[in-house]
Image 1 (tube, helix red, strand yellow):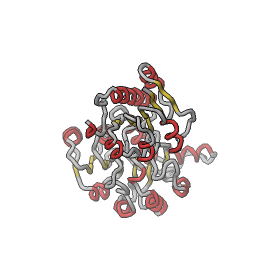
Image 2 (image 1 turned 60 degrees about the vertical axis):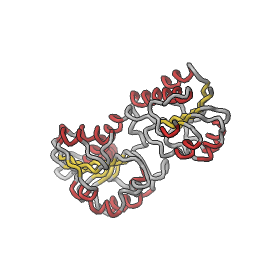
Image 3 (image 1 turned 135 degrees about the vertical axis):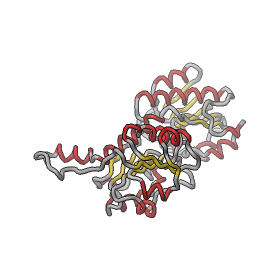
Image 4 (image 1 turned 120 degrees about the vertical axis):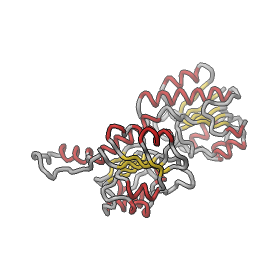
Length: 320
């Protein structure tokens, strides 16, 4: 069968696909337009896409032979699951393999913001370092502080467990109790407002849904401590970017670390100007190991789906 891939992925995944099917990879190293995806999808049985690709009804309905969509990502909010399911098209994702990499990036952002690493690096490179000073680049302590986790799923759990060495108090806001966090960290499940008011660090780990859109807005940011830091490695629209700019400018919170943005790849120009925010290019899963495993998992999902089998990570089991 024929498969269209919207971006070059690590070779091990491509090798798996080539053994059984004919593949075509989008030839440019950039996000394809919807029109380019539709063109590439013509005559194809399978589609491997990225989170940045708009796989809406128009794209899905453009190819009558389409049987399988494999997302090279954990998230799949860019795919019209309803349309795919009605058409009997299987959709899969790549969970699990990037859990630790994403959790590690959240910690990297936390430390970078808390200790003002990027700001200090710029300061030093500019030749402004004239010697040790008692008030130079004062940041926030991490040890013995309160860590608030919004969303205690795979990544939120992994992120929390990595706090063990810092003797932190763990709070989490989630739809369900997390026995692992309760038992291993003596964590406490609380409502969102209590978490925001009491946490020194707030890290977001929920999927993007209608309920989580702008979950963190002006009201929520004003609840946080002036010394608090917000970390977001989940989805950009969960945080109201305009409200965050206002919070950072007015020092409602100490700082923020972001790997995702509300209107990717565009970033609010005012946000870029601020020193108390660290900005990453949506690269939380960007380790060689994680991205390779994602490619292999996407390929395995695709091959199973095209055989009419249940993909290892099917997200619309209703098709069966």
